[in-house]
Amino acid sequence: MPTINWIGKEKIVNHHLDIPYHTLDLKYTFDAADRFDNFLKVVKSSSENKIIHADNLLALKSLLPEYEGRIKCIYIDPPYNTGNEGWVYNDNVSDPKLKKWLGQVVGKEAEDLTRHDKWLCMMYPRLKLLHKLLAEDGIIYISIDDNEQSNLKQIMDELFGVSNFLATMFWRGMHTVRNSSKDFNKNTEYVICFAKNKSKLILESNANYFLRVAMDKAKDYKLNDEDGNGFYKLDPIYARNYATPYEFTFKNQIKWNAPRGSYPRYSIATLTSMDEKGQIVFTGKEPKAKRYLKDVQQGVPPSTLLEPSIVGFNKDATLLLNEIFGGEKMFDQPKPPTLIEFILQIQRKVDTNDFIVLDSFAGSGTTAHAILNLNKQDGGNRKFILIEREDYAETVTAERVKRVMQGYGNTEGTGGSFSYYTMGESLFDTDGNLNESLSIEKIRRYIYYTETKQWLSESELSEGNLKEKDNAAFLAKYNDTAYYFNYEADRATTLNHDFLSTIKTKAEQYIIYADKCLLTKEFMSKHAIIFKKIPRDITKF
Image (cartoon, rainbow, N blue to C red; front, side, top):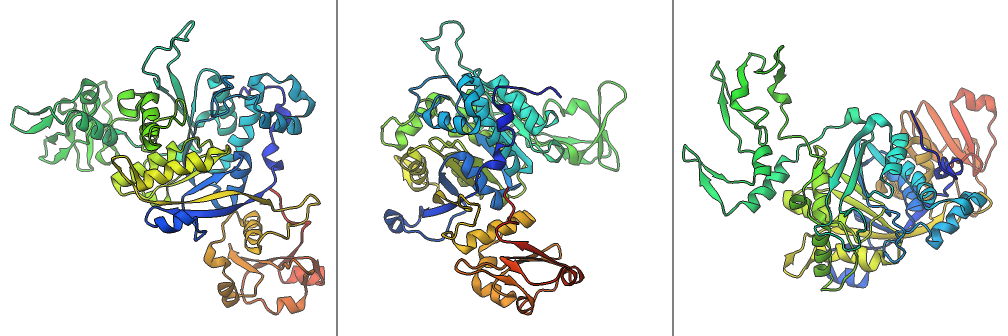
């Protein structure tokens, strides 16, 4: 497979492994139903929704223990690399923070990098971490324009695999001609879509979403058909793909209600029969194709053309943001929530309780706004994780989400909650030893993740629960292996017979961390015990 090369690539390919693991510090939890506590910003139990104020490279690494392979959908709107230094999103790869980072990672070669080289160096390790976080049946959507669209597609082919490419969607975000255009009026942006594993992905038609918007637009045009049945006269674009369902009676008198949006692919004229197995036969080129009714998709497949009448314009998003903040202009060219709402419904969602959406270039918080809107519309329970590096993470990003939850202007609030985090300390100090200022719970979670790729819950970490199950060093049992982290910040710990006498869990194998070990190799081999020395044998991922 062809790959893309640029200056500095060899220094950046595995850089995600060198990023130190940092913990997240909970600052407060906001709940729209509890305004008094939120006014005081009382730190309390965490929400499943997160807003993280941190560099996204560090934050993505910190999310791995809890979320690796769990994120169902990623939407990011990274810098387009236009070179416009005045843009509030820092859409300029000459940003001082990035230049400093490139100098540290790439070295002297960074001085010779073009702005495209710098952009690729910035994006590559972040996309690698996003790939780790994405679920096997997940999708990543990336907004981009002509400046880096070609480069982005090539590194996505390399990281996610050409076979997992889904589509490049086209969106006319600008509704007017730019006076600054010197050649073409560049009013089109792209959304590049990749699956983590295309074979495990089931796409949903956007028929219901389209139809809801279409019916709303056509509500003043209710008519009657030839049989007196009421229907809505839709715009041709909707009528073509989202016609009213019809009922068809086969030759064996079995009735079938066509799915909404199935005309004209499954019109009455194309259906001829249905056998006892529930297969329907379509007319057309020989040989005739057979499909089971249960396999007939609800509606038409998602379109790569994002209709502005459905997903909105940039101007709509700007006006909305101004309304949320009482007329104050906050951002230029934000994305409309309707765009995110649309793409979030492309995946078939069996259970929204397990549908987590990540946006690591959060900006003004549009992704959270879209998720809250959808949850209010259909009663779902989608969760969001937003990461924003800039200083406006709390004053704009988090503040917008608060106002959406509580309501703004004449718009009713969606309700909901989120926890606000900042970047905590590194797990290891400069000498490679454990950072003793961190809580033991955070260290224990890290150790268990490195061993099992699993996350220890709050109940599993509670001291009372641990003592009831086993000794205080016990982490958990996984795949018939019991894990123990015998660690104390103020003294060295020992794996010896006294420690073994406190173990209650029965397992085929025991992995035990401690500062030193007094057991013989023969004894450990006989009893399936693996000793790991602190900190030497702690894995760094």
